[in-house]
Length: 280
Ligand SMILES: C[S@@+](CC[C@H](N)C(=O)[O-])C[C@H]1O[C@@H](n2cnc3c(N)ncnc32)[C@H](O)[C@@H]1O
Image (cartoon, rainbow, N blue to C red; front, top):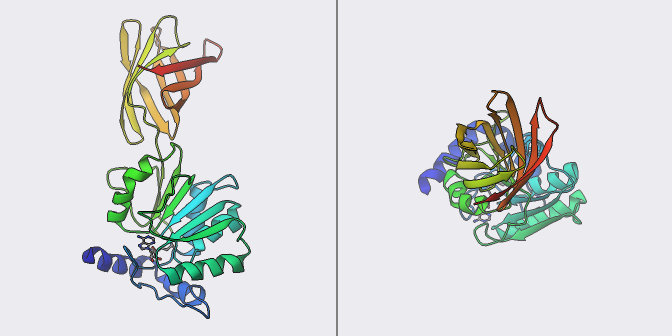
């Protein structure tokens, strides 16, 4: 843990010098002035620059329909920006009581108290399952500790992390400038066998394997089985291409909802058709 804290400070010094200067100007008020690198429960405080947090929120395509949770919210800047610049509702969870009070004052001063709440609590205790977007600037080990909870969130939930990845859950998007950040969409659980109707005369069976958002598998049409071409899973949306017996290609795009899938089937020779499927 100590090693990670030291490493975090070095990392931040190299990649977030800008945030140091910014925080001196913006981080505190007459009641409380936090210090960059000050101890936190599980991770020190280093603020995300306004430039990077805007890119993180843009990458997550935050809108007024979203509920953004910033885990370890520091002075509240990400939650405030989500509300002020993207129209979202936002919640910041911050363990340090002085920091949480400062964040609440920053919220009030920014005129977004109707849409932003700061909770003085622990990210490993508070419930953030209602979030549609999760933002974090924590540590590699904390991201890994949160990963099972995040993967159980509603498929399609967007997640963005400043500096640190999620181990073997590869990011959907990597942000490289002005600093490193990552973006993921929580994938639906699609592994297993599905019987599809509406695709071809007869029975179609889709067999899917899954490693986070990476999917592969086969489609069985009658007695013939083939590997899926270009299979993709983006949250709840599963798509792939297959070839019929005349070698013409067909495109399938479906929304996954627990044990049911619904979507469309497109090909050059036929009109689009609606398809449905059930998990076997
Ligand atoms: C690196 S700072 C990031 C602040 C803010 N999210 C940002 O990007 O500007 C991490 C913050 O997490 C807080 N923190 C540490 N452990 C925490 C925990 N278990 N629960 C809630 N907050 C925590 C620290 O006090 C610090 O303010």
